[in-house]
Image (cartoon, rainbow, N blue to C red):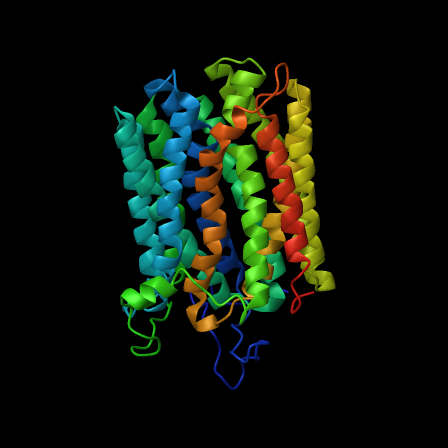
Length: 437
């Protein structure tokens, strides 16, 4: 149970004499207060609002405006380059956060600084007059927001005890769906004002993260000398972990990587699926995507909350993550056969079930297999590479897959089959984890 009498502004571990030990021998944090949990959820919602609104709809609109005759490959270029910066940001800023000795703490500077950079990047995306500036702005956005997400994941390890992580993870699992829903519906009202289309989600994310920064005012800095100095060698190690020494972390990384490939196959080209496969114009497509996002959110909320709660009750993580991976694969199979709005909404509803369940429980599973709690931000950053890398690889692979469709078949068929196979592979990888049930 979450303690109702906890002090919101003091999410710090109790004294060593009273704090229980975690499985790895480190002190468990005290029970997270409702205010802390709410601020974590709000911050992640804000970060995803800034990051996912462009991915779902608004970035496709900008690409259509700037490169209408080459929109698919241009979108792939912008997404791919941006994801490389996300890939760089996760472990790099995570390792730096672990070593931060600022009097403001080791998480707060990166939480806030990342969102400031992301907000600036989205402003540039909205104002860009050519694809080059659009790519620069999106790359800055990816680097900044992923710096925030890396420190946010570490804050969960720092301030939420294991017995609460399933429920907290379940609440956090709601945030991508809610962010996509509000972002997509907001975009329907802002299609003729690019600065507001990108600026409002950015400012909303910045405000939400600022709330968490205020709540975490007793975030403690790292003791100087506790970790090795951060030089070139350590920079290289920030992208690496020992898979033989940490096999469960490695299997979780692989499983997440494969499942996020499947998810990226759904989200990256959703807008173009509606325009090209279902034959809707750009403005109508925004409405269809907004409706599908409502379906995704409604189903995802139920699956995320119930999945996190049941996972905590029965103390099991793996079955939920594996099942969610298979449901994502099933949704891609349904998209393969979808030729109407109704079939599209059905497939997105099934996807929402898998996505919501996965996001609810996988964070709890991931935190449980971190190699070293002292380097939580670095290791969460490495793990977040598994989220970011598919966002780069899928846009690079997709143009080839989109050219393979048979005459009369779905233009997106091979892309969705590829994603489905990856989802199944993700479930098989999670099954290999041994230290977590």
